Length: 310
Length: 262
Ligand SMILES: Nc1ncnc2c1ncn2[C@@H]1O[C@H](COP(=O)(O)OP(=O)(O)O)[C@@H](O)[C@H]1O
Ligand SMILES: [Mg+2]
Image 1 (cartoon, rainbow over the protein chains, first blue to last red):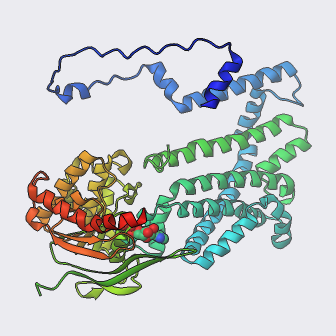
Image 2: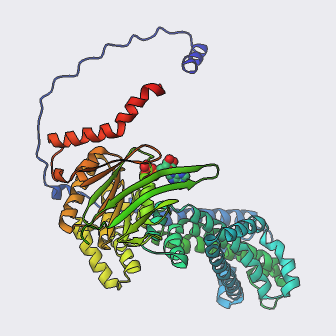
């Protein structure tokens, strides 16, 4: 009451309160009954949207427009600056990128990176799946995994690289070790959070039909937690990709077949800024592709189709 | 053999252990359910009905007393005692309606996929959901989800069907319709069901025998017959008479005790 009326009197001179009009009687109306018309005629009332409307309703199209906008700005700034050592234009970068891909100098690096990434990612995810499955069946296992996750999750993966080099020497395995660390804890954290959020009723109806042990985990808990697990996989992927590029930038020098990070590092040494840009371009492109094509497709086929996520 | 009960609960005391407390949900409850019974457990909210049903389902062990199904003590959850819960979450959102109904048959009866699907289709037919077989549960209304859960349980042909307030989350119109449909299904298939509710009307409408539990902790107050009211409209005087009797049994004592409280 006070809050409603007081500020008004401060801000405005007091005005005469409007006298509320007596509620008028609603008019008298005749009753009627109707028999509903055949649903068939109503149900068919749908018309296709206009082409432009459909195009703008398409998320991919709208996002592509944004990307094109960025490319245009980049090109314009590059041309205005006119200094290819500092800021190559979009077309220059694209030319170097395409040439690199055709000649194999860049595409080879990309493949090397992706191969290492895939090994590390799959190993990390598999390990995470195993650990969480083991951990949820016992309280002690759960305690151990929770503490381990709390300890290692905040530790940046790249910080483990020196240790990995001491233990495993220069080579792919050191990087894979670091990648596993990057993926493992993020996936474990999300998966176990997802498991804990599975409704009690769903758990009971799973056990009701006689599911237990690993089958209970894989057939009830995992699909029920799939939204969280997917989120974990996405975070794990982003961690792994960043960590890989960083690791290659810092230590990839000495390994014979360097990856994308090493390509960028080399290009800087040679002051080939367009190549640096092309390398970064590839990093971004692959990141975008995995995130918005692969993960998006998985989501559309699973959690969104099942109504577990919008 | 005919006189032996299918499900026998004797002196069942059920407790929950929480961080701070030991909660007694039911205290020395006995009842026995015979084949083809529509046995209703009726009591006020929080009197331990769900707990009792979970114990029959095998999710909870009595601290005292015993529960036996056809003479065998219950040791854990099993497909012979299919549960239908109040919550819609009991359906697996990642499976279609047909998949949800077929899944328990694959797991519990180890039926080949083809046969499970055929039986599931037939079960959906009986609950009038055949056109929705390939739809995911999130696209169904509450009443339809409940029909899927019932079809899923019945398709497994359990020894006893356990239902925990399955219609409580539905709107009044749908609830009436579902009660009617469940009764029709029972007339058609003659299964045994143990039905939990806190609604006196629902108990009288659906039950052939009604177990009344007192408020928390649940103890047996009475066991009444309602089979002679099968198919009787709620406007029938006998319906009102039984309803009032149950009401008095459940709340009469409380009404007498109330002035002392106040
Ligand atoms: N998981 C649980 N932990 C502790 N206490 C519980 C739990 N579930 C139920 N209870 C308690 O047991 C009693 C009976 O609960 P419940 O069986 O759910 O009642 P009803 O189904 O009759 O409404 C209530 O007092 C409730 O607070
Ligand atoms: Mg309950």
